[in-house]
Image 1 (cartoon, rainbow, N blue to C red):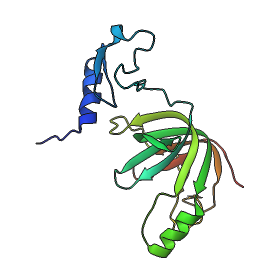
Image 2 (spheres, rainbow, N blue to C red):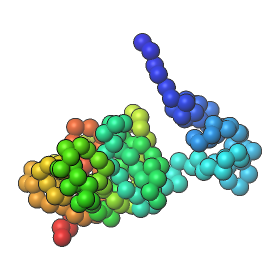
Image 3 (spheres, rainbow, N blue to C red):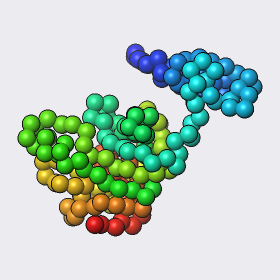
Length: 182
């Protein structure tokens, strides 16, 4: 059996094995936690903050990445994480109409549908601890059939929710707390 790891995955693996040191996720520089001073997780080479929870509480945009087969999480228009599990609060389901129309016209997929909310929790890709599907409140989006995100069982549009879980299993998106529709 062959196991192929990217350089970034090796850094993360080494960081988890040796919990007394930190390896920068951006440049690969390593240092002992005891040498970190006031900000032990900030890289001394490139300045990147390697804290695990630095994006918790931030307003993010999430979409399903068809090339990586996982969720991409964007913050300030930059992909910051790839994740197999994402939990968001104060959620908005947004479909960019121009992207949807281009898909219908050209029959070629593009990123134009997002779940936007405050990042409450996540498990970075590849995640070994993906939780089971929590309920039957499944939300879906198909640009060829719908103009917005909809409940899978009723096809009723959904625009907002208090909380959702996005799980990289068969069904991807679940509403956890009550929803409000426009």
